[in-house]
Image (tube, rainbow, N blue to C red; front, side, top):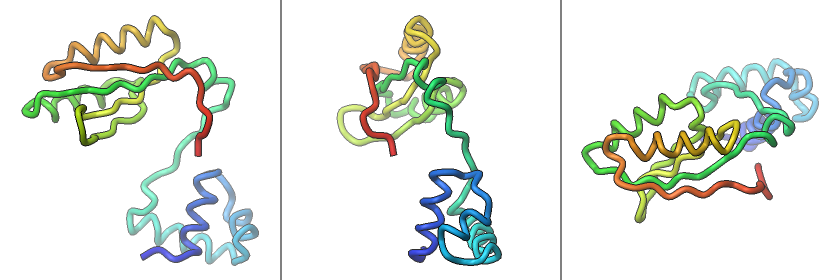
Length: 142
């Protein structure tokens, strides 16, 4: 069970995973030792699995992003997932209920590259069909 203090710490780390323990302690109103021990406890419990990089808006702005809805034949679903893991431009893969089995979030440096990626995903063994939507803008990103 996470405490309110744990949730507050996780929220601050989501904003800036590189924040110093001194900064985190100041914002939370606790000691640096308390922050460090909470982080270590959350890491040991598997609540924090790693730290990430947030890319600059300038870099992100130049990427073409798309959501790809994928229907996979049931006996090939694991193979499709494994193949998608190997594609560096796949940012997120969701398993979903409903008409489609997966939602793939892609990023590519150009429309041409995105087109190639979409063809590559559609040609994977076990992929029955795909529908893609290119993201024009992001209105909310939390």
